[in-house]
Amino acid sequence: MEELNSRLGEYVSKAREKFDKGEFGIENRIKKCRTYPIYEFVRSEVGTELLSGAKKVSPGEDIEKVYEAVNEGKLGEVLLKCLTDWKETSFIM
Image (tube, rainbow, N blue to C red; front, side, top):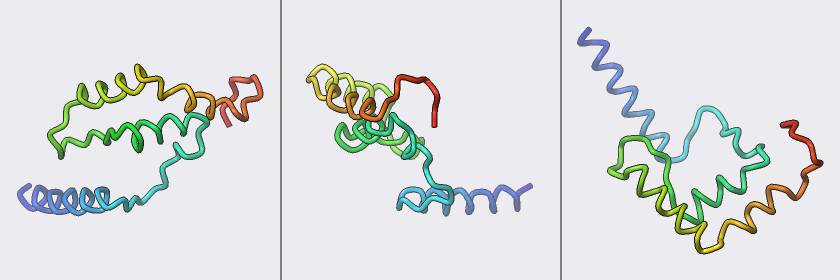
């Protein structure tokens, strides 16, 4: 059991390092989603980060950032980008 814990700790540590560097084993499928402009806006422009437990950021802090951006009217243009190629169907491609 100790060996398993040791190996798992090493594996998780290496995986987190790769993740923090932006090295992913599987491509993020959100880029193909119609709502990707919202995701990109929230991550890039608003400055939220993926909650991984490694950093001392609470979900409330990121929610506050998004709330402020919405109140400042920054989301409207982003929402319109999502609707640019919409064909009035709910079918997800």
